[in-house]
Length: 272
Ligand code: KIV
Image (cartoon, rainbow, N blue to C red; front, side, top):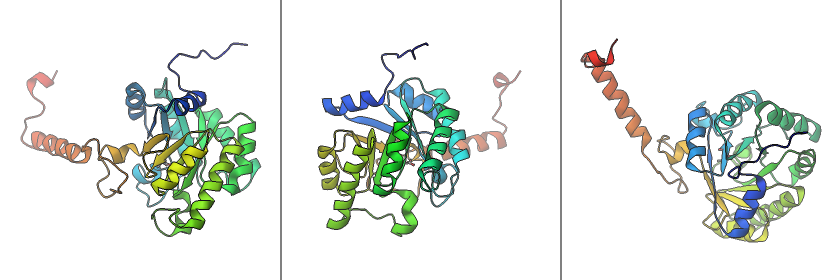
């Protein structure tokens, strides 16, 4: 039997755990295509999430609910092809893991076997705990996701902050303990009060990855299209723009159109 060659830089779930213990923040961003994944990996990101947010930013849907397992498999395969060092985590889609343990195992197994991803992510607390336990048991690492879980948007009725009242905060806290006990290697905490993010991050041994969950989470994640300033009509408080690519891209398109119309492109030098 040959052992998988482990390059020194290859990130594993154990590396993430060690980063938390060292107090070094974990970085995670989304990718759905080859080039973005390649750039992220080359930049030294630790976790690349093939998020079902592709339903919003790639497919133009209002929610993540319509994304199919086949579509996630398609994008995850492409991302995985570009990545050498980071952990690639694939989102399990709405209704691909909620029906029952057997179906969840089949679908998570398909995701891992067909894409070569390193882990899967599932949204939810106590109602998926047994599923997480069984999926982890067969060798598939699972990242949890609590707080504003977008697949439950129809139950929530809005994208407002979760866990602002005592009862819901307590439920999210208990769910985080349960997910850790069930075998999750990390948990995304989305849009919850910073105080709750701190409490959970301190209580868990596994890393928390925050998105609108305050500065004390063990790592941070953003949707890449948001942080690059590509999505113009979505600017929640937790998104910081590290570039303004929407404006730059539109400017480039306009310049190209102008050059072609004015017969300035291509020149002789750009011809054969
Ligand atoms: O789908 C996604 O991109 C996510 C992140 C927002 C955490 O779940």
